[in-house]
Length: 113
Image (cartoon, rainbow, N blue to C red; front, side, top):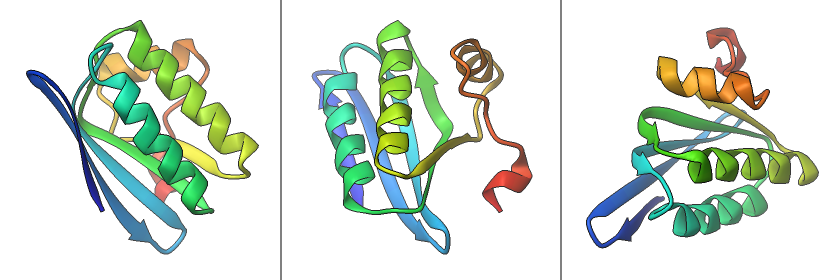
């Protein structure tokens, strides 16, 4: 499944891949106040529609502002309430610092194998 979230000049693409232990959602683009509302809806559908591990792959994504970070925290909490485990993978150094600041540590590579 591929979802495009766009706001005038900005696009965030979400590719969802089924894996043995759950799903991997690969995000591409800048996540910020302009794209977060539609992206939140897409992630909520993904969290609610399945079970097991959910890996958010942020290799080609940029956490652009506090609104984006808040949305990731909220989706992480939603996944826990739904009985799912959500982890972050391929996070850039800046993104890892932000996630650590809100106590959402990126997993070690062994966590996603």
